[in-house]
Length: 105
Image 1 (cartoon, helix red, strand yellow):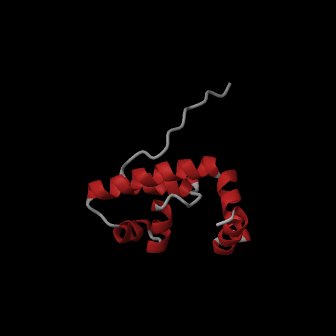
Image 2: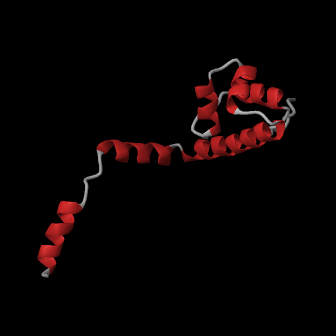
């Protein structure tokens, strides 16, 4: 089989990449730093849930949010507010982020 024929067959089989896929990849690249931190928090939340013997529904009830909201949190794709992180820390009795005190003069 000639290279030209093989090239035609490959091009016929290859699916074009949609603009949405490209946009999603660009968004992940631009937001990778907070996505990584969110992922790390999600692992800590999952560990704390397991340690308590809870499921996502029980955490959602304790937080007063929907189970879908908890699902987004544990997937590590939610841009969490400080309020949400604080609520999680209090409910799960665990530390999710550390801050250093700053002296103001």
